[in-house]
Image (cartoon, rainbow, N blue to C red; front, side, top):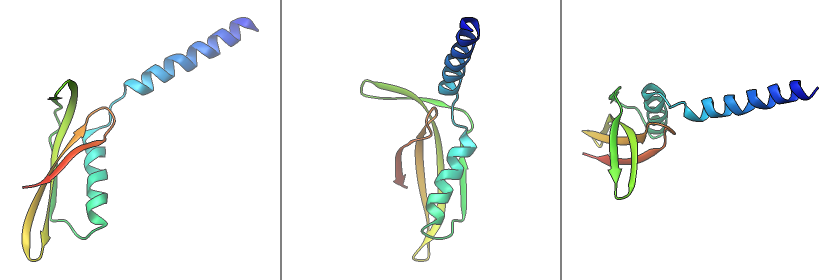
Length: 97
């Protein structure tokens, strides 16, 4: 019984560690950004860099994905660029170009 409990507990710990080390894919992040923009209207195009890039802002260091979305606003083609945390998928910044 104790051996079974130890094995079960070890399995839970290992799976928790593996899940927390997984990173969000660049495509998943782009999909989430596209969904957010589509709530406001159609988009013309979107892109994301598949390779992570290091980012440091003051004392905080992380790996990020860069991407963008293009859409028409008042008849003008407008571009937005975003920076997303590679581990969590959280959008760190988004800005209009």
